[in-house]
Length: 200
Image (cartoon, rainbow, N blue to C red; front, top):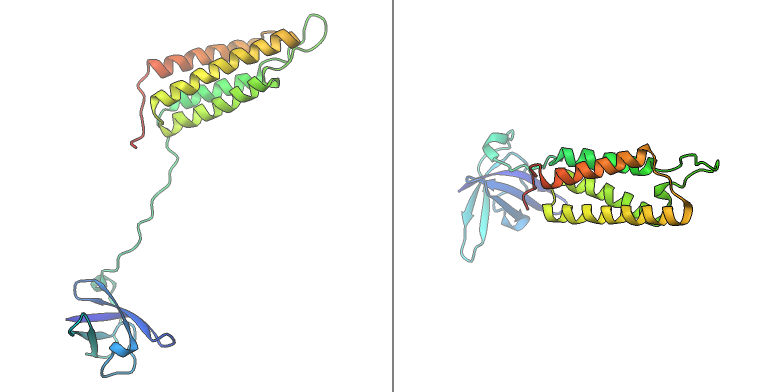
C-alpha cells in the first residue's frame, strides 16, 4: 500500500505518514530500505512484512502536501457559551439578593440606625445561598436541589430577622418588604413555572 509522509525528524530519525485509508503510521529510520531519509509530502510504498513489521520504499520525490488527500483529523473544540436555563429564577434570586443587601439601616425613632439584615451571620449565609441559588437556576440543576436550597434561604432569612430584631431592634423597611415579595415570587417561580433542567 502507498502512503504520504507527513513528518520526518532527522535528529530522532522518527516520522509519521498516513496510509491510503488515512490511518497514521509511525516509523523509524530502520524501516526505510532504499533511502537514508524522507521528507514531508513524499509518497512512499509501505510493504507489510511478517510479525507485524513493515518496510518503507521511496516511490517519488517530495511533493506538496494536499490536506484534502491526507484527511488529517483536527481536534474538536467545544464552544463555551453562557446559557441561562431558567432566567426568571436567576432574575428573582438576584433581585432577592439585592434587596437582602439593602434591607435595614433605616433611621429609627430614637435617632439611631436600624441594623442591616446582612449584618448577622445568618444574613451573610442567606446571601451566599441566594447567590448559589441564582447559579443553580442558571445551569439548570435538578429541581429538587433548587427547592431545597430555596427553603434553606427562607430559613436563613427567618433566623437573620429574628437575631437582628431580638438583639438590635431591626426595623422593617421598603428593602425588606421588597425582599419578602421577591422571595414569594421565587416560590411561585419554583413551584408553578415550567422548569428547564440541563441534561445530565
